[in-house]
Amino acid sequence: DAGITQSPRHKVTETGTPVTLRCHQTENHRYMYWYRQDPGHGLRLIHYSYGVKDTDKGEVSDGYSVSRSKTEDFLLTLESATSSQTSVYFCAISKGTDVKGEQFFGPGTRLTVL
Amino acid sequence: GENVEQHPSTLSVQEGDSAVIKCTYSDSASNYFPWYKQELGKRPQLIIDIRSNVGEKKDQRIAVTLNKTAKHFSLHITETQPEDSAVYFCAATTHNDMRFGAGTRLTVKP
Image (cartoon, rainbow over all chains, first blue to last red; front, side, top):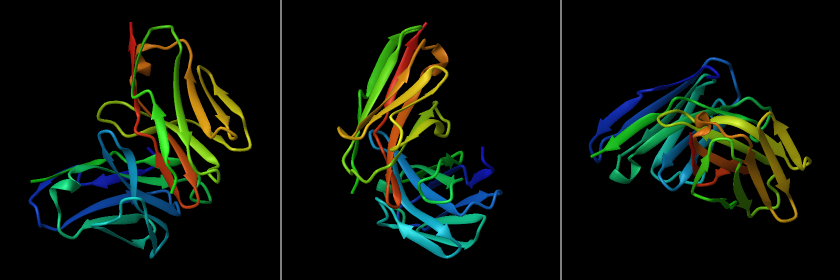
């Protein structure tokens, strides 16, 4: 499992509330990613990080922010959750030396926004 | 940005038959093409990948082929088994992100 954990694994929240998802890795990899998975869309990149305090936007970044204050932790925040953000969120790490290396996924977080 | 299309969306085969899943990509700068298998309720897992300087790669019953000129790549599974049943995703990586296809649900009937 490449030493990746996500918390929480399941969350139900209400529209308008802030939500933070945590990704933790134990192997000191430089690159970390947040994806969302929805039926018919595969996996879509939200944000990624290439080092402590170094982040960039992905394909579907609107409504999301990220932070990486330590190598091992990558946080995804929904400032004001909406029903369209109901999804399964996967964190991933890359074992390569650049962003095009093999990516390994965490177990996922199922988020429901009512 | 990169656009990856994957076909078919569903595929049903008899145990022992071969299965082929095809993907096309739009950005000629893409140079890394992984394939992931995702079982129900589980995380996607890398099963094979290919880089643009290689035309074909095999790993036991799984093979991937890449045609850079036509911008398409394919996953081939031979001698399918019921445990091959899952959703398979292709992806293409260019510049700073990886774009995934929408997935193929493969069912292997015993």
